[in-house]
Image 1 (cartoon, helix red, strand yellow):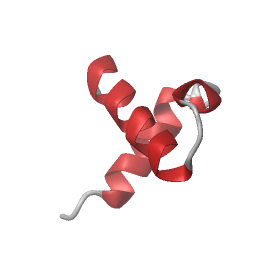
Image 2 (cartoon, one colour):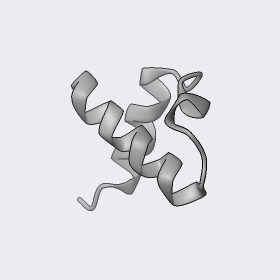
Image 3 (cartoon, helix red, strand yellow):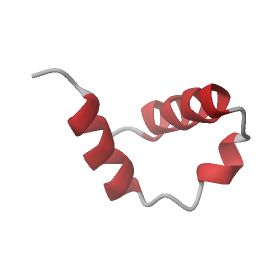
Image 4 (spheres, helix red, strand yellow):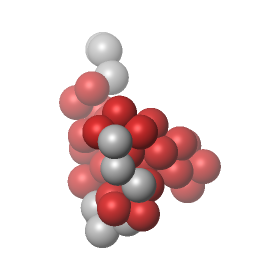
Length: 42
């Protein structure tokens, strides 16, 4: 997964939850990837 895509995802998630993107920086890239795959329609 590209860093740019991950950044955009974190920003969108943070905005949706009314938080700052940096609040999600602790998420491991693997976890974010797993989450994205779960949310992506097959």
